[in-house]
Image (tube, rainbow, N blue to C red; front, side):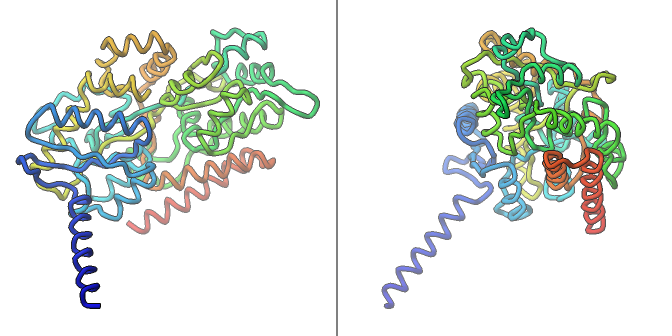
Amino acid sequence: MKRLLAGLSVLFVLFLTACSSTDSASGTTEDGKTEIIFWHAMGGELEASVNEIVDEYNSSQDKYTVKPVYQGSYEESLTKLNTVAGTADAPAVTQIFEAGTKQMIDSGNIQPVQKFIDEENYDTSQWEENISSYYQVDGEQYSMPFNSSTPVLAYNKDAFKEAGLDPEQAPRTYSELKDAAEKLTIKEGDKTSQYGLSILNYGWFFEELLATQGGMFVDNENGREGEATKASFNDEKGQKVFELISDMYEEGTFYNSGQNWDDMRASFQTGTMAMMLDSSAGIKGLVDNADFEVGVAYLPHPDDVDPQGVIIGGASLWMAKDIEENQQQAAWDFMKYLSTAEVQAKWHVESGYFAINPAAYEKDIVKQEWEKYPQLKVTVDQLHDTVPSTVTQGALISIFPEARQQIVTGMESLYQGEDPKAALDKAAAEVDTVLEKGSRSR
């Protein structure tokens, strides 16, 4: 029995030692390099791309070593970070999705990269303004943009031809969208074999359709000129979005694809619907997996609107505050490396995400990729045509995940016959309640 207990004790000590060496945020390698941990949420082929970029960085210099660790989805990564933030187990660099921006700023556990920008007089003009501005508050850059995307309209060019529509002229306005969807919808008795349009039940798409009209999600200039206290998305602009979905669903031209991205894309690829909204980062995969020609166009807008453009989605890289200065320097050096045109060109080509450094688009590998996938250039053009403002900069609220879920609930209620205005007002009231609770807890 004593031998068994002794053996277990040894195993327990070894386990703790292993955990310590694996989970420790940073340290020093045997060859004297400063090692930092990089948590990210890029799975599958994207993880392989991230690992390769990190390996190339580690080989490019002899001062620092970055260890990438996949942490699951955006939500899972943020949850895990919250359990170790401010401790020795916190990673030096963490990738956090854009909806977690305000939460990260309010946490007090991050070091704004503005410190290093100022110290080095680093030229941030090399970053795409319509991307980096999302992560700025009062002129201070809090994190470095990494993987960024925007929504676009993807459509089946073959289906357009069969419906007598011009495959090179995608609908831009709501009336054009409705007209095209009606012509694209194929019904056989009570059965519909092809729908005109689908929009994933995901709050991000609503935010984008609101923003392109110039609509604010919350008050106080989208929470960027003061703490947001109330939802403002249930105005006339927000109602137009819900009315579009409700009207087309009742007309039988809109397909409810649920909340799963893979299911939506699979339905599009099998011809269930001829048009859908998707992330620009997913376009390359659509083209590769569809047996028809995929078209890509700008986000549609109401007829009487001068479109303002889109808000970026995706994620950025955040630096931990309570780590040694040499570890912060390592984190900053790694971020600068990721920002280079060469790395961004590789990342854009392999991932489909935007290059945060526009100089990347001049690289040969990007030009060659755009020849193969001209759809990618459309996504970049839409970003460049976006009008910079607090609207397209995006809302800044700490309860964004909860707010998005309220929008999802509202969207789903439309399929049950809920009045669009009532559904949107209900979502806004719930968001107001959560905002108020958050304000009281601070």
